[in-house]
Length: 126
Image (cartoon, rainbow, N blue to C red):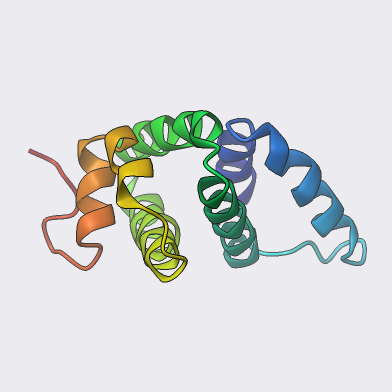
């Protein structure tokens, strides 16, 4: 999952690619950072971009997350909902990011996970 998820998401945020590369190089060879660390670093970067008002770059990211959700198997879906979207929504609220910077760019599945990541209906299979 690591390679697929990283490849899919890094390409949407050009400013993150350099940051993630530097972060990865801080680890010894053969011991790369895990998916959790990748997602935490990515969320932090997105919060930073939104805080600066750089919505155009994050728009591609949210469109890709929506596509990934629509194609995800149950395991990837849960990771995206819980560890990316739900956690990102919480971090944006804690950073006082205006919801109007984010909500217009959320697709149906992403919006459901953003608003209520613990909902049993979060799969959006309707």
